[in-house]
Amino acid sequence: MRLIKGIIMVIGAIGVIVIVALIIGYYLYSLSPRIQERMIPVAVSADAAQSFDQKLDALESQIKAAVDTGESKQVSLVITENEINSKLVQMLAEGELSQLKRVLINLGDGYFLIYAVVDTPGIDAKTGSMGRVEIIEGKPKVVIDEFNVGKLPLPQSINRRAEQLMNIIVSLQLPEMPPDITSVEIKNHELTVTGTTKTAK
Image (cartoon, rainbow, N blue to C red; front, side):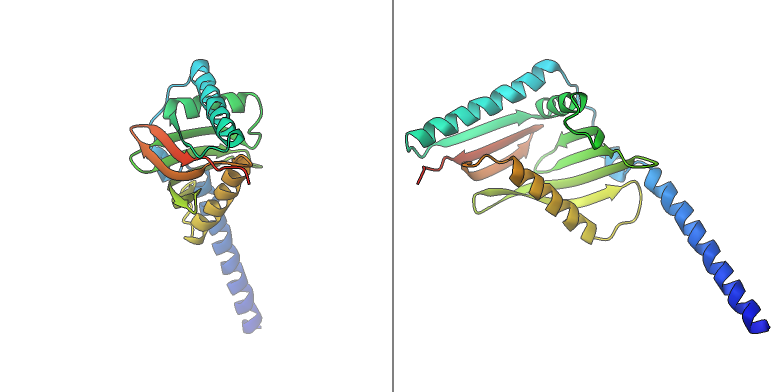
């Protein structure tokens, strides 16, 4: 009888611990991530979103012209923090980013910060990430140095998974015949990408 009571008490104690852990976890999940504290608001405008589109169109025209003539040419793209965030706000308003409710990007010296609110059942997930961009074999690779979901303590493996997901998204957005990227610089609230066009085989 004592053994049964003991087992029941242990199970009850474990249940209480699990419930407390879930409550704490849910609370930490609902909080804003540490990275958000470092974020700086960015003014957005329709003109800046239009400038973003115009710059991308101009770059694509340069690449196409170089490819059509079989010319290997250096091209570059400079996008400001204001243009990136303005375009993201426009995409959110047009429903192109259906899983996101809010997103903000800051460009530091050599790194980027992203704060995003993801639409999830119950409480929305508030995420933050800090990373940089490296060039590997002529292609950009995103490296995530820190990833937060609320204030939950997350294992380092989560950084790698977030990194893999972001790189899949980046690769899907690259044109079929992109230039070989030679450098990506993040500085003074600007993202500068430089590359050399490929000649058609």
